Structure formats: C-alpha cells, structure tokens
Length: 115
Image (tube, rainbow, N blue to C red; front, side):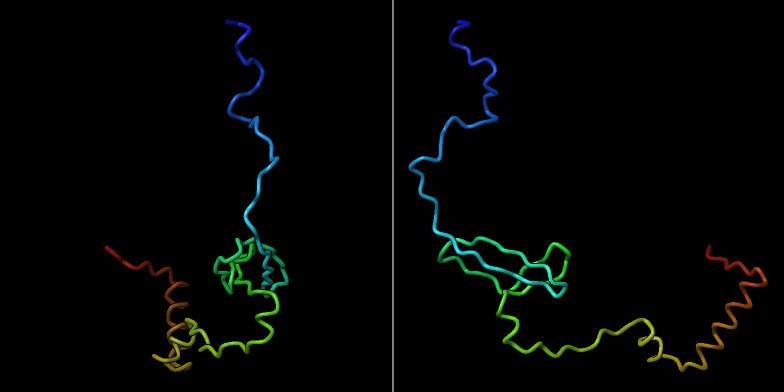
C-alpha cells in the first residue's frame, strides 16, 4: 500500500495536466483610460459585448481609448451643495445673524436639552 500512495505530491494544489493541444477562445484586448491617466487593458472574448465604460482602479470611470476623444462631453447640471440649499432658504444676512447667535450660546455654555 505504501508504494501506491502519492506522498509529497500536494494533491489538489497542482494540476498534473499540461497546456498541450489546448485551444483557448479567441480574445480581443480593449484599452480603457480614466481622467487621471490610468490605462487598463482588458481581454474580452471575440463576439462579446464590450462596454464603453469601465471602473478604474482609482474609482473613476474610464472610457475606451480613442472613443471618448471623439464624443463631446455631456452637459450636466452642477451639483447642489449644502451652501446652495441654505441660500435657497435664507439670505446671507440671516445666516450671519444665526451664526452669531449660535456662537454666543456656545460661549455661554448653553447645553441643549434633547430628552
């Protein structure tokens, strides 16, 4: 029985098959570039639908190389900030008066009763 055991072969960790006579699927490499200049090349199977955008490793949205240069950027609405929303409800004079009142309360040691 000791002659038939495969000692030291690390069964399961390594394959005993080789890559001879194996035909891999045809692939196409597509390059993506993000606004920060990172370039990523990804292999896709021939005939697969290749996305126009890909998430870069930095978190930004990367576009296909050469594709984004030809298309104009979309016109988007500017992001509304907290300050913009405050100015929709109050004028700068009202905000200054409110800030002065809250600072005075803080200096006097006023503690709100939330219970």
